[in-house]
Image 1 (tube, rainbow, N blue to C red):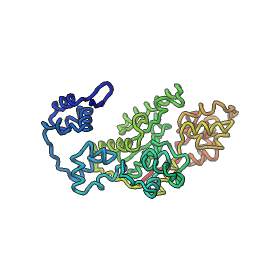
Image 2 (image 1 turned 135 degrees about the vertical axis):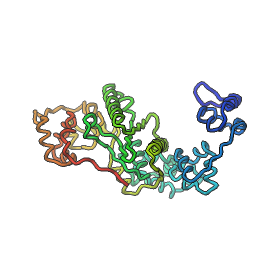
Image 3 (image 1 turned 90 degrees about the horizontal axis):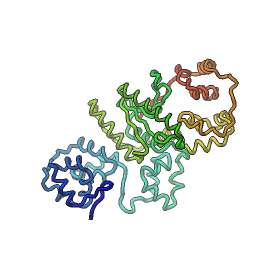
Image 4 (image 1 turned 180 degrees about the vertical axis):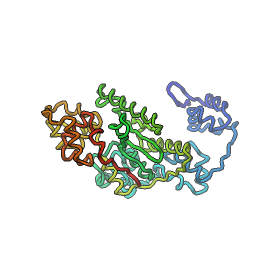
Length: 399
């Protein structure tokens, strides 16, 4: 039976054998023709197809096994792609040590007892993050009516899945980072926060939700603005020789895929800069899970639903300042306030008055709490970076 590996192409056994004969080693074959290699693996033609190939023996040390295993999200995937490395780790009794970063993957029948499911759930701040990472445990909870108990500690409105996964990955691997990092000494990007900055690796990580591809609500204007903003930030990072990683939700969104991409990037940077790097995963503490929750963000539907409760922007700002600020920061405010009555500020808040207002405070949060309309107009008019230049900057999240 033919095996399909790519659209409009089928790897029959004869095609696989012919393809394999082009290469001298399995690694060379896999690197140059992954589709035929995977077909041989699935259909159990691998030994026959590779019978002419040289056997390359590797002296697997603990460090080389860790480096090899770090590229894979589960033991099953590692075993499938690197059987020799997996077998060596198992023979030497090193599996648990080198696979500590991996998700649980497929477990034996009857593994997911209620205790195991509750233990799994405790590692996550939201239902969405739990379902994205350990779907079997999540499904067992639903099937056995354990959801209420399993999710009692979870936040009702956790940050979007992608950023939450990145926060948790960095925290659980003890990697120091700054969230919403601003480079205020550089005018081109002074008012443009970057999602994550890792000082040790001089790395920016930007997570792009679907609005970066289609705009908010598929709005062409917001799409153009968002993509122009992304281009400016990326070009600036390149000119500053800052390493830059974009994670796009339409390409990767599962926890193991995101973790693998970050791992590969960190290993590449470490190799270039001759840093030693050992990524060892641990469970987050309750305090750390709360830290993830405190970075609360919202999705588009939540913001629009919240905005509909209010008749004016000032009402919205007073009644739900977090969703209002999120809308301003993500180019969603104009869409969310179309139904609202526009009230002019009667020229009270000129640029000069706003800067004078800001000078009375040392932190943005303090200014926002005491003179919310000044803060909002500064944000709307693009004066925020100048008005807050004297203020104390954000904090670094360290483990």
